[in-house]
Image 1 (cartoon, rainbow, N blue to C red):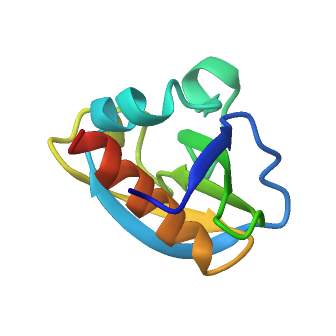
Image 2: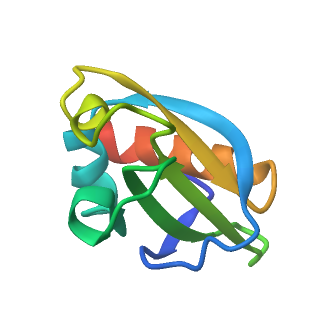
Length: 111
């Protein structure tokens, strides 16, 4: 069982930076984390990100971990969303941000 509990799928991503990557397809991410918080084609153009989840986890010690999952500088919104597997970026407020996404995702996909 994962040591991370998903608390919020509408977290404030302010101050996050790249912490790692996850290979997954868009539909599996939606199944586990819900619809993205930001979609450039829906919410307004961004020159760097088309699709982004903003997540907040709690670890076993009760610490809050902010994680984002996003595509980066693609030609359009469907490059990442239509790929069989895509190398998504994971941002966060600590190195633990990538671990939280990876562990939580793997546990839910194997459930």
